[in-house]
Amino acid sequence: MIEVRGVKEAVDRIEKISRFENLNMGVVAAKMHKDVMEHFKAEQGPEGSWEPIERTGKILQDTGRLRASIKKTSKKHEAQVATNVIYAATHNFGDDKRNIKKREFMYLSDKSIEDIIKYLEGRSDK
Image 1 (cartoon, rainbow, N blue to C red):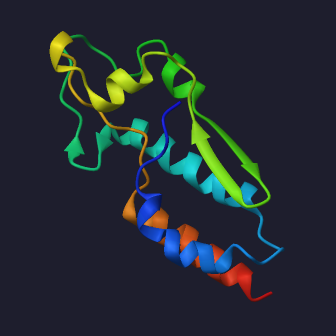
Image 2: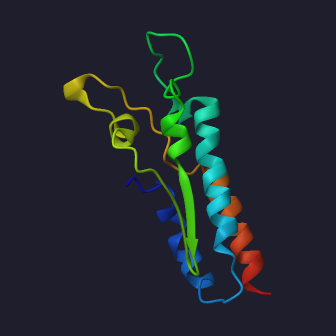
């Protein structure tokens, strides 16, 4: 499993909110999933565009299996986006030994993090 990077920066703010009972973490998981899917569409990571590939087609989307494997789940106070595809980590983090470039897709953009925090803060006082 690959955990989405980027949420840790918001943990303090979210922990203050998480004690409220009316939070819909399914909404948060959906926002996270949408952001990760956007990285495939834009073919870019937090550091910019993914390194080009030698064949034609969309990067990391040859068969669509990796992109389709990204699933969202939620519990009462938890939201998660993950994949169970064995080669996902290799592409997300890269592998110098096998000359596979890092093409990070499992992260949350700053905009997405702020959007999630605003949603949670807005829900916490209701």
